[in-house]
Length: 224
Image (cartoon, rainbow, N blue to C red; front, side, top):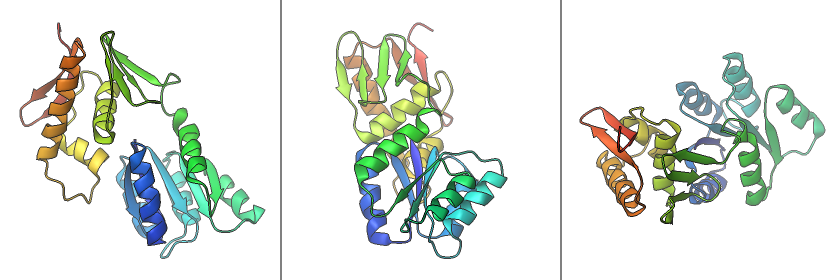
């Protein structure tokens, strides 16, 4: 799952991003409202966290512009103020939830899970063939065994299992998982595909990751 985190306090941003990534989220941090709007308009995000007080454009303005465009991405608003009017304004402008700073990271993680639950299937498990990916535990399993996937492995496998038989380009993996501004080499996608293939083989899975040269990767049944 890819999240945009808009917060102008750099030290807080770095700390939150680190914790979100350790919980298997892919995060793009931005530090002002104009960049937040540009990134959200480019698409590709599953959720956003917007600080209300940001330079160039505040979080409420960003929220209103995104909602006016018909973009219903789940959004949590952050505010350093506890006044009820700020909370009401955010919710009335289309926010899904809000948190007052300082906040506990466990609460933020819980609110992200709750906010995005409706955008997933009601079941936390993705199943294809004899193989299951548990979104709650990050576990890839078959009747033979199971593996708890690392962050990038999990995110790639979730993309593949959420779009069975559909081709996903290396560019799409890079955009969704490593982020627009990443300096990571494109070859890293092949490396993680290799890791996942080895795990599927070890599980005696009856699904496989196929590659179409210069086009992308897809998840297919072995007997198809």
